[in-house]
Image 1 (cartoon, rainbow, N blue to C red):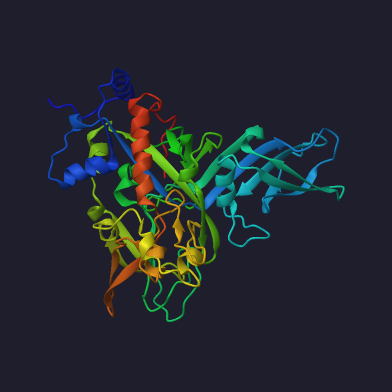
Image 2: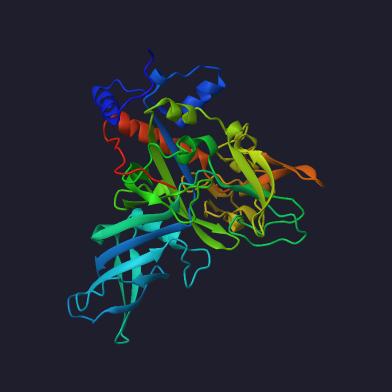
Length: 431
């Protein structure tokens, strides 16, 4: 009789022996697309990943800023002009701060700088300015970096969504939105979307058979753990909570993303799916064509129609390409002005400079470059209602599939090299 179940211990033993078959979600889905039949014995672990805007993020820091008894306690603190919540520990007269910083917090001096930018700078090892106002109305400034932070952990309260939405604006007027890096043009002119479809962790384990409380994952490239469901999670649209130490995170996987409503924050999750039974196998074989993507009105998120992740990812380019020779040296570079990552810098009389490591591959530059120096096929949303049927061009992708693929590959390599240990959940997650 063909085996259709295996234990975590069996999988761990196979990994230790070097005989485990570990595939990324992309690898196994490509095999299915090519017509290959995948049986239970053909795969032991599937690595999944997603990189996108994940607003439900905060970080907790603790570090020394002065000698003991220099001040009673802090009342207000800013890190690179980003406001921090002081406490919960008062640290009276210790010269030490305990701080909570929201990933969506905005700088008091720079409208394009937020918590996501700050967190990436901290992980990069940059020096951070710390401004402190004390309860005795004493103000001083100091500096720190992650090496001097005894404690620096990032927490997700709403991460790694199973699926998300596509957004359009059917009204005639343009509107600002966190779901667009520029004004969201009206009359169904633009489409944006979130989600990596068949790569998404919960999409590969929708019943949460293997993802549970205590599951070991990678958050921004470093080991972390699932704490349970995130906020506003539901059986139809689940998401996860989790945490990880920031000291060993990878800057490339995180950062700030400036929308037309202000800065947002980017995070990356990579999650192993141990194929413990036939049901899990069937889920990891599901392709984008079977994963629904709802199209909603950006003003109120009113459902308008449905499509699939096949529409937005098939035959598209994961990576933006830049041809400097095509740059026409505009007086005002619209790409530099609107790039949500600040990944393009243009100096008058020279070609624009593109930073691929910082680039999120959202695609807004493709629309905004007058010289067509930035190129990528971004796809369309097939919109259909009782009154209207049209193809709406995708102008912004708020998920970075290129680095989601890289994160899944990184996790695969860590598992096969035994650097990352598959862990059985402490407890199942129940909706």
